[in-house]
Image (tube, rainbow over all chains, first blue to last red; front, side):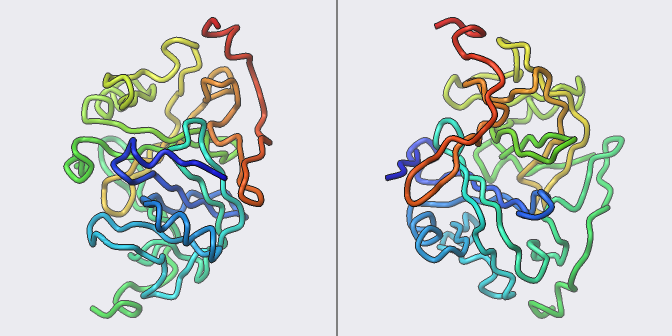
Length: 125
Length: 125
């Protein structure tokens, strides 16, 4: 049995999704116990949405689901790293491959991520 | 000016440290506004320790500090990805290169990470 420490983060643990082929960090979000159990059971990544306050199957609207390739746990059992096969090649709702499509440069943000789809075409404007 | 959303996480944002050469995810922790400002100012990664409830210069005990190579921000400004040069080649206090030195396999955890130093030799037993 794998015991994660959900109590430290009031029921939530940090979760990082990393592309299993390239190593690119695609996104970070939270899981509660239910999303953790569902992820293990289905092999499809489920998070907990803090803004919508509900279980969140990643890609439920866009179809860009995340297939689990490997799950790693950190030293104090309160963070999960999942290597995923990102269906649709884009993790971010903005259409970029990674949510981290901007980098800090001289105290401002520069967009240098790869855009895969147009947000309005997928979700409606 | 870069405006991060500290309010969503009660003053804290998720921070991921990734090896700038290999892409290996080394650890995840939190930053508050002070640690974010200090990280930008010094180019050395500072976190906020939830367990010790204090500002935490990573490597302050072990010497294994993290030099900032690149900082990336996610789409909703509440998560930071830092590509680092990990001094001492180990991010984890256990002596492993990465805090994610265990992977899930058939509902148990298997250690397959690389051990760089012995915990007791560095921190005392």
